[in-house]
Amino acid sequence: GKLRSGDTEFLRMHSFLFKRFRLECHWYVLAFLAKSVVVALVPVLSGASLQFCTVAVVVLATLCFNSRLAPWRIKEANDLDTFLGAGFLMVLLSGALLVEGIDGTRLGIFAVVVIALGIVGILSMVVLSAHLRFLRRGKPYQFFICHHKVAAGNFARLLKIHLLEHRKVHRNVFVDSDDLRDLNALFTYIKDDLETLVVLCTKDVLQRPWCLGEVTTAFLNKIRVLRVTLPDFTPLDDAAIIAVGQNRSTSDIRLLAEHGMSMAMVQDALTWLRTVSNIDMPSLVSNESILALADELVLKGMIPDMGVQSSKVNSVVSLVHSRIRFILADQSNMEASCTACIVQKLLTPLLIADQREGMVLQIWKPPSVLPASARQVVVVCTNGLFERLSVVELLIAAGEGHADLIPI
Image 1 (tube, one colour):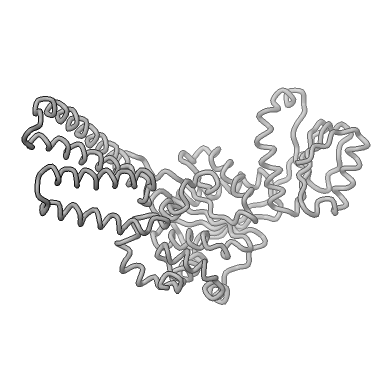
Image 2: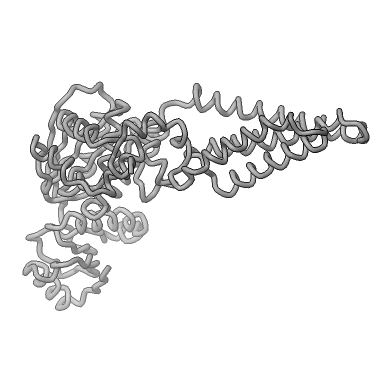
């Protein structure tokens, strides 16, 4: 009931019980506490053998649960718990040296080897932790692209390609479809592993609870945020921010509440989002315009936060060559345009021999006409593409010129 009603204050007060564990394993806190209780009551058992067996069974069961379920939110925490449990079990077995009636020599050799391996393992963990904490230069992700997949999935992928190719981007760029391994750890990536959150502002991005959670997490943890405003985005005003809180479904409220975020926090984050640096994108998307966007993002990501600053990326149209392979896409559809740009980026390195002969891979831009020497036309098929007169005319010209049509 508390979770469904979005009572984040109640959840925050009791978060020490379950917040360390994955949502699917929230019950594991009971097993964790039960283990502690059983171990604490072991001294009341009669006989050293019974005490050793009881503790060994409890620790072994914990190891099995941890290996099978991985209940902790962070992968490293699961690894550490398994390692420490195994080490404790080995030390426990080594303690059997003190029990009468056991061959002390053989058990002593075994205990020395086990303890030596444990010490080496602990020192390795300490060195690795020190390296990650003090020697690692910067956070693993230089940029995190927050986007609505339906409206800007290909835009985000194309932007990631250009950012990774940028000479001043030396670390990874996070796109959830590529880099997300555990959905429960999504907000942890933003909190601990990120320098700059890039929000692709499309029409419905703020209707997605995960996008709201990403922005709110960045706001609460003072992570740098940059806005990229696309043409269909409705500017945020006070009424729109209030509506975001009022029109949320129960499942959305529950999802955010599970991660300690209330609707008041989300609305504060959206109010703050209006004050961060903004970059306006044109309606016509090309590899050149995305490259210019990547330059702007890198520049703004390297300078101190100066509050509201707006800039604009201009449309750039490439020259049309006479010997050409065309990629045909609906230029009024941003995702189709981004798909064409991605296809061009991926295929161009494979066509080096053709480039030496003067053959280039070109994205069609209206009102260009199809040259008579065009050899192939790659058609990005989307809804409404064949309703455009210019597209139909180009396809007719391709048929008359005996150019090959390759639909995707």
